Length: 253
Image 1: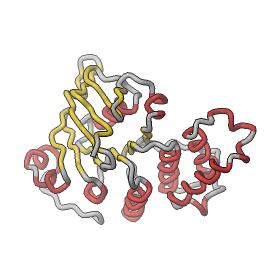
Image 2 (image 1 turned 135 degrees about the vertical axis):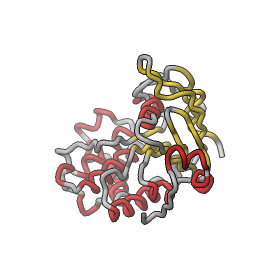
Image 3 (image 1 turned 120 degrees about the horizontal axis):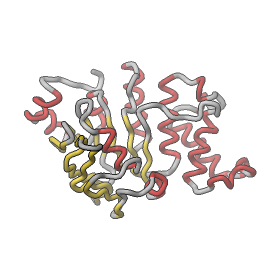
């Protein structure tokens, strides 16, 4: 498989404080990678570097053979990268359909041109309806986002993330704050909705991590401690000492 996303000796400092200390990471097309580590390890900072919110202090970030470190988020998004955030970000005063349609419109490059003719854009409507099917939100089609349950708001945000048409998806703690039942449902939703795409996900729920990831990257104190299959990471003594400890995990845990 070809490499889609690559970090080369990526470092990030805020003043004298080192957050990331020489990260080398290579993710292949179609891989699902979970990024784990204790609070303060630098996980969200790494996401911000990849998605263009920050520029690295040193090192390089490559997406589909193009160097993207220092590029603006919109320019990186146009190359096929989409990301969600820890805090749910939807248009609370718009319906589910309208939220998803905005994402699809921007993904197809319509920008502000759609304002007077959106109802005639059949391709946009078809893609929006397909997203509602993918995220199991068909019955909430006309419901305002602010009236959705928390889990449905997260599902809507996933749909918005996918609506731009990106094939490299960054999800930042997608199941945070969910009940066990909601988490299990959302795990299956991520599996189906991101099928065939490259996924990098920050997640603290080990049931989700081991139930979804092809590989796990363990970040501790700004350094990449391990990057391997779930089985290898589970057996890694250094990872157990630094983060996981003596644990037993299952998807239903």
